Amino acid sequence: MQATAGAASLQQIRQRGTLLVGVSHVAPPYVAGAKYRTQESFDQTVAADLAQRLGVRLKTVALTEQNRRQALAQGQVDLLLLSLTDTEAAALRASASLLPTAYQAGPKLIMRNDTDIKRLAQLKGRNVCLAQGSAYAGTMTANYSAREKIYPAPADALLALRTGVCDAAVHDDAVLNGMLTLPEWKKFSASLPLKAMPVRLTFALRPQDDELRAYLQGLNREWGSSYWPAQQKNGSTTSPSKSTWTRTSPTATEFHSAGTSLQAADLFPIAPDSN
Image (cartoon, one colour):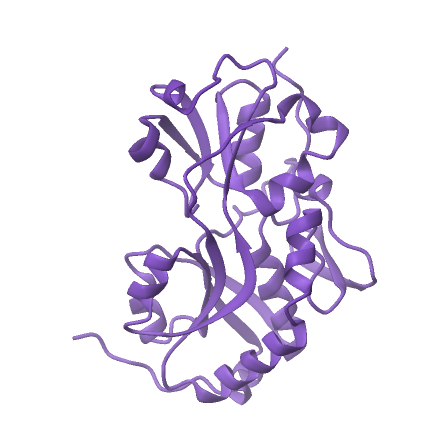
């Protein structure tokens, strides 16, 4: 029987000076000489915004479906921020208190416009790129007998598509729809409709964390129901507090108070085409 940590109060988090958030993916450490990229997902943006509101640093912890319940129960993280299917949410609800946001996305498959894949059945045996921790990992093999290639981050999976390593890539439609409006991606707009599997960005807390739950409930109300659908429509990732965040160095995150948004062009670096 696993031990359960006591409730994490907002005062304790502020005294510690760090907000610990469990996520499905943490960007790999910066390597000297490598191109430094902004984060590729909404969970990182929301977690950073939450830490800023609390006046503390953010530390994200990569967790898997197998260890995230234990990490939360034992206080290794203050909360989880995950994109969950209905089935995953139902399983996690048995041991955690869930607070869904209004952000919802589904899988989108993109390919080169000159692809010879015209039907889903033709994905059999073909390489499909996905990101580590993606809610869609495993589904391309299970549903279409595709050969999945898993990359550390969404940007890496999409770069593999551009360079011809993969025949297709799958990521959130909320992000890809905006990215495909960019001129640099016009040659990769071929798509096929995948089996619906919506995911919702959700906070998960220990049942006893009443203060933190109340704070996040208020934050959800502040964000309202209109913010997230707007982001899904235009594919951008303005943080809910209307702040834009960019990585300015391998060790610092800078917040800019502005009414503009972080666009898909900033999320995904452009690589040369395979031909």
